[in-house]
Image (cartoon, rainbow, N blue to C red; front, side, top):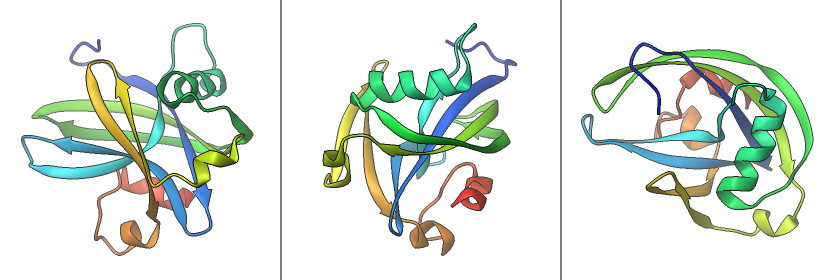
Length: 142
């Protein structure tokens, strides 16, 4: 668990299919706001962000990734659940190795103790401001 005042390093995967992106849904109870972010997770000590990306997709939804390409780095300062956060995000473009993932409407998975949902969402819904993508700069990679 992250201590307050620490910076987290995350590896996130942008998986697109036509005009849709595979994204995880979150909810901030303090702001009473639903938001979306690319799937992935924390980089462990001694692990590259490339390895972390593959491990996180395997752990969370049992998915193998292919065509992994580094896109860039984002820095994200935010408040979630009333607490300040600071993340360094290593962003990758990638594809699912198994085509079955492109047929899914949504997928429920467990992250720690929380149930989360991943789903395909039209990219235009983020660009129009209808839905909130975090961090917003992530749109630059879509």
